[in-house]
Length: 297
Image (tube, rainbow, N blue to C red; front, side):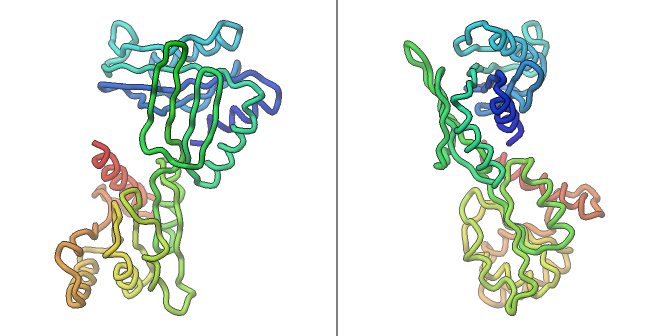
């Protein structure tokens, strides 16, 4: 999410005061997870540490620091109704880091990377902030006798490749960045042999999500043939049950196994009775989130 970093950048460029509030640890049903962060200035805030009464208390504490109070040590919040006004349960540890003008260069690097769909690792201590283009998989919070350090992945860890460039692809490409996915759109309809090598050019692995939705049945089949034997977290085909069944039958005759064909999610999306490209995009995005979150358990 670029918004909190953009707020820090604007504030520092104007010579204003800013502070970063970061969730370092969480447990139970806490709405804020490790790595959630919020930028705070005397007038504004952007981002979230999970909302609710705890976020309001953190905002108050952050603004006291901006007015001259010393930054507190890592603060542990118990999320019980009688203590925080929430029914969630669990607990969070929050870090309060003043962001002086000396951090502007690093903040600008982060803003630039996030706006390009990049990812990396944020490293902070009570007095430092740095950014590395190497992506860390999980947050790490460590306490020391005289301080602490926190490392956290930042940016789009999950990559979505949309195979086809129609109205649905455009609608899905608008939704996914706000859900933590970087997006690449492959529209090859004007090439001589569309989508024959798309499997060689999309990101692969357990953080790669593929949606095939070309404008022709044949091209869907060509794309799937290139993709099926490569590693992905999610491989979906936008098609009716009849169309999807026909394509799978053809691929089976070519030697693709039952297990390989079972990887194809089709029809794509959570069944919500969607009709328009925007509604279908919501249903597919929801399915991608479900796959991602179940893998994280």
